[in-house]
Length: 505
Image (cartoon, rainbow, N blue to C red; front, side):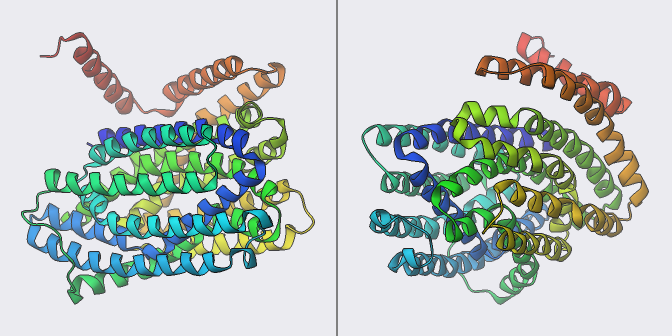
């Protein structure tokens, strides 16, 4: 089931990334770098509004997964109803913040005067969308608690494709920031309607979830969330903070250049986190059952495959990212290529630790992750504040990359392994180091190959990506996988081949 769920989330993210990448050069072409920079600024504000969630979604998913595992559907209704009330309060806060920003946006952001009015209207529209998005997270959490990731995936894939179609149509018709904001609102409304219908069909509840105010689950959410919110603040500071600070202290064109690089970095992070995140309900269920050995085995397996996946993606960004950006959005974004190349390797180390973060979140020890992520975010923001006035973008990239590897590889595995009784030496040598050898060999070989091979077209880039994939996957198979894992994948291959040929018995 974990494999199926990971695949479903990957398909969703692949469609999301593909549609966003298709839309980005078109938006830049029709609206220009300045307006695109303002749109990235609006999306950075949107991402920061996720902090108002305060960890409610994580707490609801964890508690509901445990209650579903124990067959306590009545308690799920009480927990979900109480979280519904919290979501409604949070939605009012989000709407209030957006309305406050819309009253005088030029006092906060560096916006061209002729775009003040349109930017303010967009803030109001996104405020309404943000309020609806928060209340709708209730239904997505219930589906995730039942491990119905494939259902959520189908909904999101459909809406991403519809959003791309609307964006392209409205841009061709002369739409601007306002059109993009309205499409965003329409997507949120459609998503919440589909999630509500899916909960009624796929979640084993005999009644509708209605707002309640039961203090026991609310206290649980508050206790669980007080540490999760630290992690959320830190993560937003790391990935959206730089663009937001650039929007305050620099011009929109610089925001666009840095935003393109960080968007590519964020896509890599999301690919890994979406694949690893499906283990959250499983860790929670294993904890309820008191199965320490199962948790150890799950952490080991997830770590190995997180290293495989993060190493492959970050190697691709390091070797081919600058060329991709040049072909994607043009030569004016050469500084974006420098940024992704500097961040790629530290990002691989950062993402290899993601299963530890999922484990700590699932068993309620996420305060360690919260303090760590908050420290990383504050370090980045402080560094950016000091270097933005006079330094180029690659200096900002160095600050972000250094924060990724300064604390996380030291502290996060230590707390995760200690919490489930796994030896730290086994974690590093049997999981991380063993899985990293294949990537190290592949990186050396491919680096010299791509120094000789000058890539100047999309066709050549696709061929280079295929070469990278074949070389890395071959080395992972030969060096990275253990004998039992090879046997598992060979069995899976035989099953898939039997289904395709119709020879399944």
